Image (cartoon, rainbow over all chains, first blue to last red; front, side, top):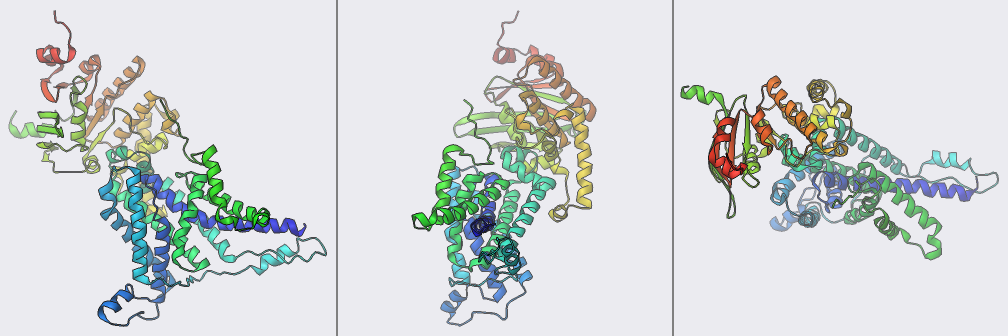
Length: 333
Length: 263
């Protein structure tokens, strides 16, 4: 194979990997949208908050240290060496469940049966609140997140692909980050687990029922509040996974919350109500923007990755507004 | 019949129920009871408050005044899902099914009040949760046989014709094995054949499972045929209550509802 073809394949593969990361965020959106019709603007911030909390536990930071020091004139920052990564992840998950419970208790409960736009505004408020809380609790500096996943280029893959190049070319192999491969693997496991949960368990069935019809769900004895706490907890779990992956890749920083915006075009492509849609949408966006940048980018000055996804989404809105996998919009008159 | 035996006999007792929305009075001082094992029909012209009555019974509406006694106990303020867990199942006038789910899954949701295994066991999906799922599955298959809907077990209910959707909704309510079954116009919008089928199912349910049924229906022929007792509402007030024959000859009822000249 010629180096040009191999380069294209490399770009394609890296696009898939990038797409998986988008899908991870989009997944959280879909879960909440499907079951409660709420577009949760705070999903990206939840990923950030989860990552911040995880690093905080891991490195033994004292929450609200800055605030405590200012008020009491002390100088505390850490309470020791930190803790085991697995323990930190479990504790962070408990915090995310607590967060889901608080959100239901303080926000959703009072907005039942309100217009979707009201609920959307509430989640914007939640996003700002969480961002501020994360800052206050753990500080605004960029943190390194290391959960023990391998990272860096794969030499094995480099060696393998080098042999694919035609004789005599100076091709030196493809670059693939091992961390990305791990992220892809974890995303697959996550989706399979979520699908199995929603298809084969009582709670999963209740989740689907609530997503379908609130009133009917109530009459068969499903508590909407319990289900919402469950859904937000699961979304919190997905946010944690996304936070870990993004954090490990590019450090835990507040711009992480902006990746939520990249999930929007993914959702428009895949449909807001479809889990497979979130995955496929993410992959298409990831591959699309990398290939576009690689092929067309040099001609128009590059940096196409900033806008490509949104333009693609715009085209989709014109031709298939419900997304690839969304429920068909049928207006009966 | 002495007092104790009478109350033993009564499943649901509504006492002086009044319900209003702002200035609109939907129900005014209504009292009636439903005995165990009977088919009780609620009839009345459009806007008489029949559906409001059903919504009070299953907890969608909370009456401003009055008491609801269910199964011998005064019911406090409760959420609809809690009331469902106490043993009241219902269907809706405009079908409220889980349209994206299969017939089988819809019926399985009806079993939710009877499922106990916690999320941990479900999550690892083995052992007790599996056994429980299978037991419920058996009950549901029995209902599917009973309602003769085997051929649509795996079909998403959104794709089914109206009459079958009504039947699936009845199935989901049956799956709950409730003490009281509320049917809101189970035969509305059906053709004659579908109506006869539905009538047969309602009577069979009553015979085979001994379920207490309260139903709203417009078709007077149907009501007179299958109801043990009838309560008549008009403009939110109760104007008649009793056996079909009594109600049929009640002058208020004839004036208000049947509106036919009597010979």
